[in-house]
Image 1 (cartoon, rainbow, N blue to C red):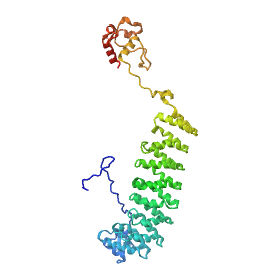
Image 2 (tube, rainbow, N blue to C red):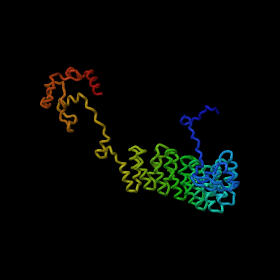
Image 3 (cartoon, one colour):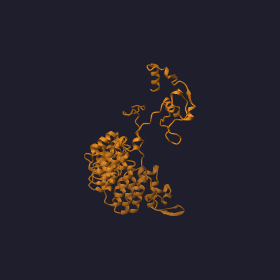
Image 4 (cartoon, rainbow, N blue to C red):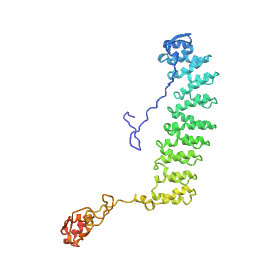
Length: 450
C-alpha cells in the first residue's frame, strides 16, 4: 500500500477519518516530604543501606534521612540509574521492615513507568500483607497503577474487586473507574465477567460503569447493555437504561433497539428512559415510528398516553384522526380517551373562531377597475378608515365615466369634483365602441382578469 493511498467510506465517498491516538495515562501523584531534599547521588546508597543516615535541609529545617526516606526518594531517579533504583525497590518491598515495604509501595508507580520488571508480582503479594498498613498502602498503589498498567495489574484488580474487605474493594473499584477514561475496552472485559456474578451488588456496580464507557467503547458496550436490560435485578436494568438517552446522538439506531425492549420492562424508571429516547430521536431513524404507533396500545396507560402525545410528530392530521378513532374502540382509561377525542376534532372546521381563522387564506387584492367602479357607485369594498371602521365610500379618486349615467347624489360632494363628463372607457377604449363579440375586448378582459 503506497503512502498516497486514502481510505474512502463507501457510503459517503469521503475519506475515512481516524480518531486521534488514545491519550496514555501517566502517574501523577502529589507526594512531598523531606526526602525530596536528598541529593540524587545519595538516593540509591541510602535506599540500599550503604549510607545509614543523611542530614538535609528542607524548607528551612534540618532533617535526618534514613533508609526508609531513601526508598521514598527512589521515585526521583531517572535515566541510566533506573536499573539500580529498580533493584533497590525490590529489596525494600521484600524486607521484613513494614515501613520499608510501605515506602517501596509509595515509590513503585514512578519506578514502574520506567522499568516494571517484577513489580506487579510484588504488588500482588503485598496486597495480602499481614500488616494492615502495608495492605492499605498496596491497595492505594493498585488504584494509582490500574489506569496506567491495565494488563500488568489485571489479575490483582480482579481479585480485589471481589474482596470482602471494604478498603481493598473500594480502591479496586476506584481504579476501574479511572480506567474508563483511558481503556474503556478493558473496562468492558471486566464488566462482562462481573455481570455474570451471582452477587447483585457486583452486577449493580458493574452496570453503573456502562454510562461511562458507552460513548467511547461503542460496540464493545452494546452487548453489555443488552444483557443488563434483561437482568433479574431491577437496579441493574435501571443502570443500563440510564445509558440510552446519551446514545441518541451517537448511536440512534442502537438506542431505538434498546428502547423497544425497555418499553416492556416492569419498572417505570426503565420505561421512562425508553420514552426519553423516543422523544429525542429522529422518528425517521430505524423503527422509531413503528414503535411509537405500536406503543399506543401498550398495557401501561402512562406509556400509551406519552406515545399518543407523540403522534403529531409522525402522522399528519388525517392519519392521527384515523388512528385515534381506532384506539377509542378499545381504550378504557378516561384521561386517554379525552386526549384521543381531541385528535378527532378537525380544528379548521370545528375549532373556535380564532382557531378556524388560522386556516383562512388572505383575501385576493381588489383590482383597480373594481375600486373605480365601487367608488363611483358609493359602495364599500372592505377597506378600513383611519379609525379602524369599515368605509362606506372610498377616498377621493379621479373617475372617468359618463356623468349623466350615474346618480351623483350617491357620491360624496368632495368626490364629485373629480368626475368628468367623458365617455366611459375600459383600458382607454370607449365602452360603446366595444362590440359584444369583439375578440379584442375579450383579449383585453382576459389580460386584465387572468
